[in-house]
Image (cartoon, rainbow, N blue to C red; front, side, top):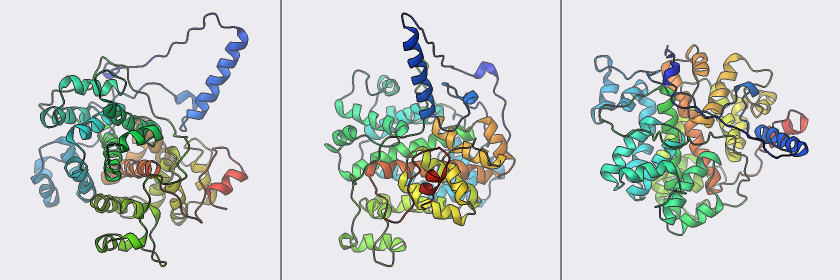
Length: 453
């Protein structure tokens, strides 16, 4: 069982304090402002009770929750996995679950070394997401890579944390950083940013850029939540002289009604593409829009599908736990396609229609067990700050083994990645699938919509 380290108060590096100064405002205006603040907070909530809300990031762990596998305790699979990789804590920690790592690593290799993005652009996206998620390990490792192999200076690395409005970026670089911000906070690339980047990038490069940023949001979630500690010799640290980034909330923006990247029809498939998509071909010869869209990038298709299939049906998590994580994640990021395609899977996992509807109301809705509340909180906390709290981790560690704890983080991170791609590419839900819940309010109308009645 993983232990929960106690974080001393002296190690809690930074706290944000918001100060409101009421000066020269009439009583009526104060009342209106007070009401607007209440409405805004209610709209932004991701399921925390009022007393649990905070504008500060949780302190990051100073010791691991899951320690790296010691050399003398490694089995053959772990030795093979680590033999060709640097002696880094991230690899030695994920060696606890070699099967998951091997199914994910193909996507990781593509994003890191196989895409057509310029190395400078790739590292800018990775570092910006690491900053937004406050992942010290990701920042330190990729600042090293950016300055040693991608042509960025230490000053430019610092400027990535300052953001797209900082002086010194080209217009394209501003839009690239803005893409990472929009994916983190809106769970979708905005229209203006998409048009600006698309003027220089191909559709395939747009797909690569989205998956690069989204992959490193997943990595941040894993590093932060497992407590992976810095490797010796890393000289960069998250900047301490800048305000902290915002926390993420539930993404509620409108989703696209037409695709930006259209799915390939079966008549357009090459023989190679037909072979790749064969497991997904339906009786009428077509494939679901997710797979037909991803087929637009044949090199990315394989590693993404392998990882996605593993998360969807091959982990050791109980099906109920898996579907609670996936559907709460889909709700929080507004991934309508993801929600629609998992309603039936949730039923097969044993969730009732009332429970499926209740997922949208969050972990503090009446009726959940302590375990289910903690599972739903995982999705909320990873969405909020790319980190699972000590409280939630403690409940999970008493019920799940080490491999399952790793799978929990990867499930939320992996389905967040897919959801961001779905939203940004404009992948449309096929006819006949359940509607996305438009409200967290309980009642017959929202219940019928969320379960497809």
